[in-house]
Length: 130
Image (cartoon, rainbow, N blue to C red; front, side, top):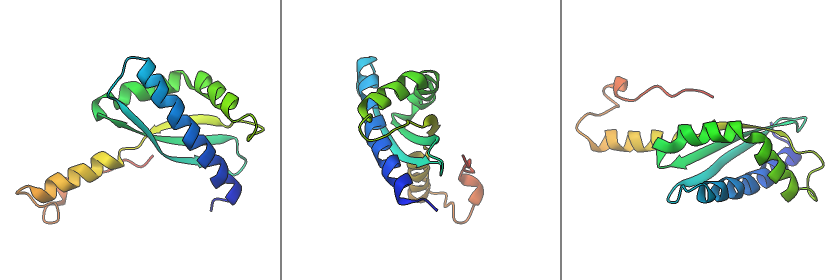
C-alpha cells in the first residue's frame, strides 16, 4: 500500500515529467503528438519511480519511449531543477508504455462490430502485464 509521502512525491513527479516530456516533443518537431503521464508509482524507499506514459498517436509510442529511456539522465536532471525545493533526492526514472487507452478503444471497436468478444474471447488481444 502506498504511503501519503509516496503519493505526494508521485504527484509532483507526474506533473513535472508530463510538462518536460510534452515540451521536449514540441521542441523536437513532434507537433501534434500528445504525451501524457497516466500514473507514477514510487517505491517505498523513494529511490525508483515507475512512470507510465500514454502517447497519441500510438504509432510514435515505441520511438518516443526509447528516446525517453536513452535520455533519462537529462530528464531526471530537468526534474531535479524543477523540484529542488520539494524533493531532496530525485528517484531513478523507469519509463513504461501505458496501453490502456488503446485497449479500451479496441474493446469499443469490438463491441460495435459484428464479432462480439463476449462470445469469442480470442478476438481481444491478451494484455501484457508490466
